[in-house]
Amino acid sequence: MTETKARASDSRRAAFGRRVRVLRVARGMSQEDLADAAGVHRTYVSSLERGLRNVGLDNVFALADALGVDPSELFSTGGV
Picture (cartoon, rainbow, N blue to C red):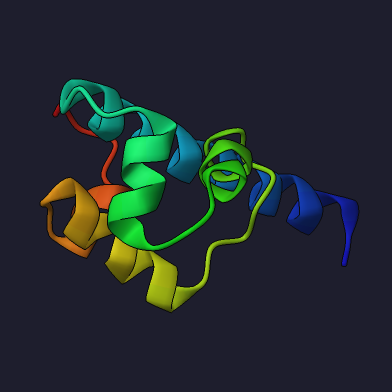
């Protein structure tokens, strides 16, 4: 992977993680609450929000369900 592509991937993961955090906090959920509702480990949510994870499709849907949003909302840069 070229350096430019690597930076783009890092940026996308970071943006996704920020969006998950914004939605989680807006709903008054802790990372542990979200993890439990989505069926993932709390450290997974933590690393996802910090942009360290490349989230899989199944987890996109699990997180969206847990947050009560359409999966497309996790990719939005708009308001809550």
